[in-house]
Image 1 (cartoon, rainbow, N blue to C red):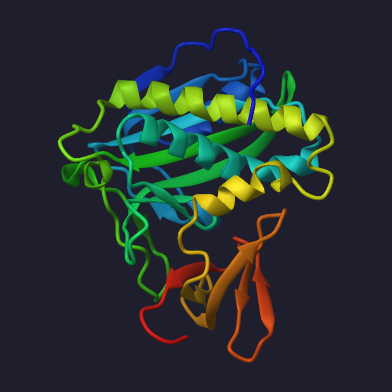
Image 2 (spheres, rainbow, N blue to C red):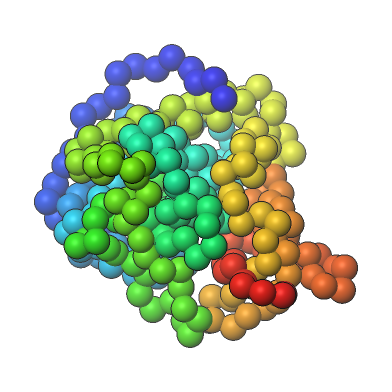
Length: 278
């Protein structure tokens, strides 16, 4: 997807520890900070994931949030999480993490193999302040085995096992340092956002916010076509079937053995791969 030329991005603010980089960047957004402003931390004391889950954020990881001001209608901002995750994947692959892939809706995993662990989790939020509407794209990356963060309090079903960036690197390639990784992800997320924003303004997202990236989104998601179970937020299994696709609003379709289809928004369920018949 082509991106628009843009002004030089502001320097990333790097801190050793903060409560939540998303909260820090949201405050910057309300104060009118420019597109591409970012905060990176070595640890968080109040990190969070989707659905209000706590995200454990020990030292040894990268916790990065980026302020985005795409010129799109408010209802299209729900596409930011997937768009930003694609940018993060671009950055990780460019740095030698050839085996990273996406797990619906926007987790970064250590490879397409069954049971691949989570390298990074994403949380996108919208806000309004001086300068108008903005989005915050937050990502937590496990850099090494000494600093693996993960969700806490996720219900009774076991969540995706954590992994680290070292697990996904090309053989013999060292994982990047925190500052280099932060800059690469921020730049790639902004580039993806700018390209997507241009596509939306050109009318290519009339059907839904993911329409401009849907084909590529599919290509980065190796779980498509595999047997899965849909797990509700309280840990109960809603159904088992084949992960059949994602629509332009980001909803996942699970094809059941009786021939029927069930759709889930990302707030309603997560998908876990099944080994064996559904």
